[in-house]
Image (cartoon, rainbow, N blue to C red; front, side, top):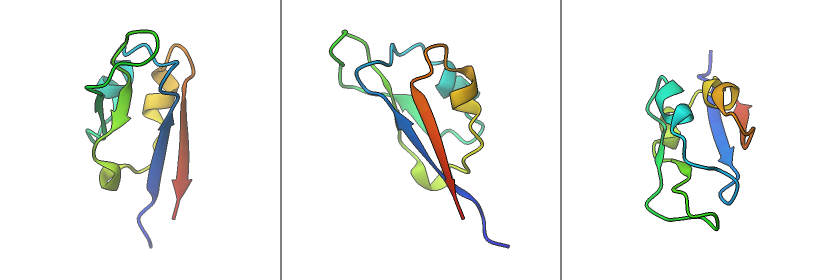
Length: 73
C-alpha cells in the first residue's frame, strides 16, 4: 500500500504565527517563517514536506482557519 502524502497550504498574509499548528504536527513538518507578513507576524510554513502525511492536525487546531490540507496517494 502506498504511503499517503500531504500538502499544507497556509494563507501567508492571514496567519498570525500563533504556533499552534507547529506544536500540533506529529511529524515536524511546520515551523514559523523568518519572513514577516503584511500584518507583522511570522506565519507558519512547511519545512519538511516529505514528512507530511496529510493528517490535518494542523488545520484542526488553527483558530483562524487559514490552513488547508490536501492528501494524495
